[in-house]
Image (tube, rainbow, N blue to C red; front, top):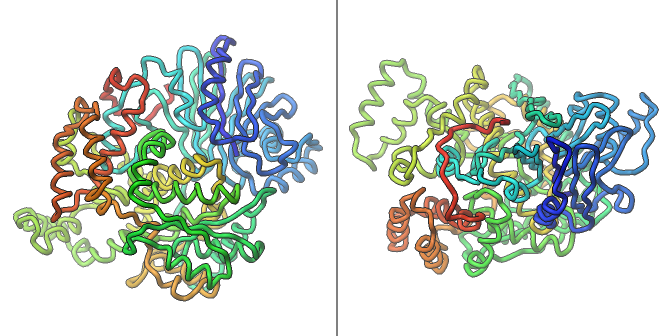
Length: 624
């Protein structure tokens, strides 16, 4: 695990002092070792959190003509190492993974990336061909940003390391801001700074000195439901998940796991305990019992026979930590669950260096309640077009708040227009009221995805959209940043290629049933976890945002809005009115207020914030 910073110079020169200063911004990703090394036309910076081969696997690592820096973990690197030795006579100077990646690329070429099992972002330089290669894992577990300037190409684990080189390009993209206000995150490959892009999940980047980077996809999500007996599907899931959890346990440092009240983390803890009987689990909650999962997690831990450490998050903790949380995020993510996750990681990092967590299960196995909507809407959605048009007209004249209006509107709206993710904060009309600039429609992000998902059932199409947007943009971003904020490696066994293959073949009825989400997964872990957990509905560290904003956090948010210099971007007076109405009670504007609060905190942290200009570009993040 590490932070990486790479510069490919256009003319062979590099400002090493500036690169060293930028690398310091990634120190939290790797406190064990720092290096800045030139390799031909490229300069490699690296901060290391030592997990495997702690004494020997220094980076940047070299293999023949190759130099590599690698962030992540490969769970099959020992098998790849043996295969390279047997097929090509490869010999290795270290016991770690980075050298194996370089050797794999040397002997197998770019197709080597498809053999890697794990989470990774890596940059390789081949001195023989003067070519730089960058890769990112299929799900986007590990981040990788890039910036093209007249001086050359920069790549880094976090955007904050690239901004010093962005120069006059530090402007805010209104398209990205528009999507953030709706989705609560900026969908990749874009960032709020149009000059800086993310290498998308499942993609590679290739570049030569003096040329622009070329980005290519190597992995495509393929959800292909197959009719099969339920017992067969359930057995395949259990076998794949057990193998993945056990593979994710490889470590030379102390290891723990996160535990909420739900089935995903409980399954991971149960399977990890098979190999680590002394496993310690960690959970978080609040002093408001309506939102806290500590009691349920404690019952699960006791049933599974693991120790549990709980973290209690209070209002004052939120006020103190939120600016720091935003700094670590790079771009704002308005998912309130980022707060308990930050404190959860802080507690775990005091004991262990690696934790296992349950991210990805909902996207793979159908865990969100919204995935049950197609079945609920089917009686109307399946009617002939003229009838549906008539019902939509009826819905249009019904007053707001009348029972059935929302149902008719959604049932008569095509799925590609009505579903764009789990978070829908500001709608089109609200954004037109809030934003000073043009509001980009969500369909610019989701439209191409629905086109690619043509032929899938509605549930699978919704999952396909979430796998490309919500999972990397929200779930995995906050998991990576909050864990790395405390130099903690977070591993996600559900996002493994064998587990994915078992999930991708599930028909809709084994994902969501009339009574439950994640039906097949729940059956697969039945007997491994307590029955009460198998049937428990999803919570996932819920946060009392509504309550916070009616108390001290709300007072503080009002001060943040009053001081925010964002009126050229947003009508902040409108947001202050929403806050005042929320604090009076009777309405709940908490998600909208929180979304703008996170943006204002982020904007105030930007270099020369007052001088930032606005870009109306709707680019999705080309490679320039």
